[in-house]
Image 1 (tube, rainbow, N blue to C red):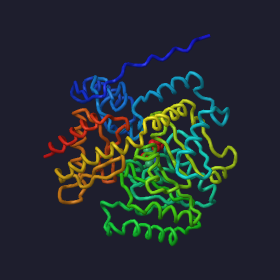
Image 2 (image 1 turned 45 degrees about the vertical axis):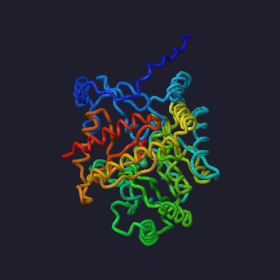
Image 3 (image 1 turned 90 degrees about the horizontal axis):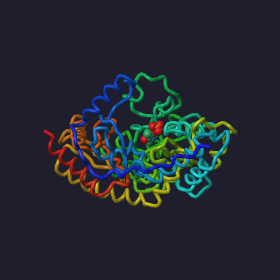
Image 4 (image 1 turned 180 degrees about the vertical axis):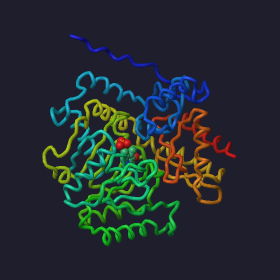
Length: 453
Ligand SMILES: *Cc1c(COP(=O)(O)O)cnc(C)c1O
């Protein structure tokens, strides 16, 4: 009989920025050489620092620098890096069951996560869920189920959309470089519609929602035929596309149109979900109730997990064993999700996201007033972005974006970029970031803009 080793908690990582070497430091430099020799050159690299430990809103690199995390691993660790409840649940769970495959021999964690998804996603109708490993896999499954239920082939998606990197989701994703270039041929029956992008719209802002909706509904009716459309798939706030927030009224009109024509309305909440925008889900803002909601990223505090939640009649329309996968809803990931969701409730992280959004929004608008390179500040809750332009124009300014990111990195603040035109800086802080840390990071950002030539 072996006894389980008990888990010894590590000493807390101070929630403060501390830069002790050049960035990257010497150890990271060496590690980068090994990385280049051992790993595919096709893998991108945003920050050239190797991370040794994380906690809360701090990432500590192998040279001992404490860096402020403004990216949350791309909107994943909403509950904070190495969140206590997640860590404890994971350790406890992996000692009990690491894997059985839910469709071979089930366990309760999977069911409990699905119960929570059914309860937390919008709408009081009867819902059911399915768990898989990644956002892309969840999107694929949502489309599979919608096609199976409607017996229709077409899927409507949008400009600037990002839905993943598998074959079907590459077809659903808008941007060619780097996501699609040379990776085709792509899946068929995918139809792309214009996305209302308020900052870059040519039409009158007051009528943008209505104008966009009219064009899209016309094209669906005349060019595809409503009776051929299985699903309309949309991110309620576009993530990789540059945090594009559609004008009020657009999502409700689209959802109503879908319902009227028996089209499944699928909200891709992979980046916007789990308190990020100040609500459980971004569609809550306009009380839109999707037929299906796709979740991933923030769901499990850093462990790989994704969900498809939908109307019970849709989710139950598939024959037995039509859905599944070896690892989908792995017990350890489910335990992590239960910890993460508990933490969101206990710490009222949706409210915290609103609070962060207020501080960030105010600071970013103050910077916009000082620095004409900031064309627009936009977002909701703790999902904010700035779009950089050549002053006095709306011409994308990729160079300024790169300089700002580089400056912040050198000072120990890690910030992500986005945008079809490669000119958006996006802020996705862990929702547990302290006000002090947030203000410190925003101060560094202000210095970065002041340093621009
Ligand atoms: C990240 C993302 C995906 C893909 O998720 P993966 O887990 O990387 O496969 C899909 N949709 C949106 C909106 C995303 O942000």
